[in-house]
Length: 98
Length: 302
Image (cartoon, rainbow over all chains, first blue to last red; front, side, top):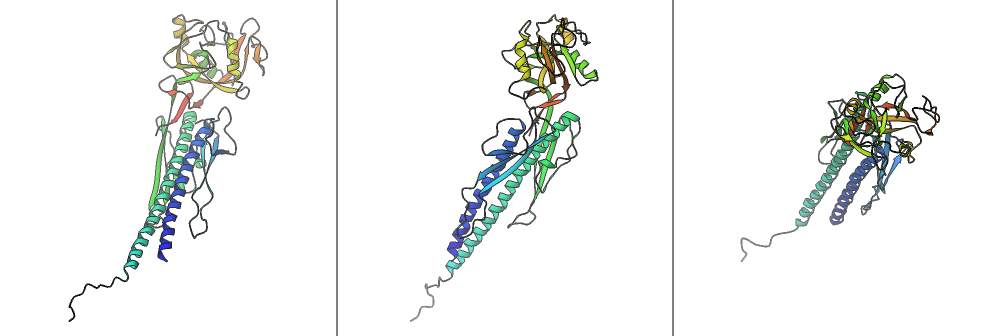
C-alpha cells in the first residue's frame, strides 16, 4: 500500500517541477515578447499581443500587453485526476518605445 | 540446555519504519519543491514588473521630468512597488510580493526584485541624412507656433539663422540613414540630389506623414567660421526629433497645407520641410554626452 503512494508522490514532484519550470520559461518569454512589441520588433514564437499594438511611431505614453503561451508536456499525476492545466499563459505589459 | 543469549532477533516492523522515514522524506521534498518553485516564479514575476515599471518611469522622467501617478498596469495582483522617483538620470524600482510557504513554513517572507532604468542624451545614432542648424532649432522652439518651416536655400525670409546654406542641408549617405556622433564632424553632400531624400522622409514602409524622424543638429556659427558653407563637414552638437508634417522639394511635395511650393515663393525656398521639434525617447543609438535637443535614450541599466 505504501509503495504506490511513494511512487505517486515522487512522480508528482517531477510533474510539478516540470510545470514550475515551464511557468518560469513562459514568464521569460512574455517579458521578451513585451519588450519586442514595445520596440516595434517582431514577436518571438509563442507570444501574441493582447489588445492594441504600439502605434508607429511609438507613443511613449501608450502601453502594450503581450501574452506568452507554453504547453505542459508532463501533466498527469498517476492515480489522480489531471490537476494541472494543458497550457500556461503569462502576460507582461510594457511602455511603448521606452 | 538453553543459552542465555540468542541471535534470533525479531525483525518484524522494520519495513514499516523504513516506509515511514521514506514517506516523510518524500513529503518534505515535495513541500520543498512546491515552496521553492513558488518562490522562483514569484521572483521572476517581480523582476518583470520591476523592469517594465522602471522603463516606464524613466520614459516619463525623460519626457516630463516627473513620474506619473499610476503604474499599476505593469504589476500583477499582490505585488507592490517602491515609490517612483526621477533620480539623477536614473530611476530605480523595487517590486515586492509576499510569498507564503505552503508546507514548510507559513509566512515565509517577501520576495523582491529591483531594476534600474537610465535616460541620457543621444550621442551616436542612425539619423536621416539631413542636418539642421542649431539656430533653426532655437528659433523653432521659440516661435510659439506648433509648426515651423525650414528652408534649404538662402536667404531664408522666415529664419533668424544666419548660417549657410540654410536651415537644413544634406549629409553624405548611401541610403536613408547615416550614423552621426555628437562632437564629430559629419561630411556634407553639396549639390547632392536632395530628391533622393524624399523617400526617406515619406518613409514608404511606415504610415504617411506626419511622423517623427531623428535629425542631427550642427553648430551653425562654428560651421560658418570654418567655411563649411554648403559642403560641410558639419560639426554635430546633438540629435533632435522632428515631427514632420510636410515637405516640398522642387515640386515633389507632401501636400497638406504646404502645397506644391514652399510658402515664400517660387524663386527661393524651393526646398523646405515643415514640422516641429518634439521631446522624444528612443532605444536606438548610444547614450553619452551631447547637447540636449530633447531626444533621450531610455535603457535598462540593471
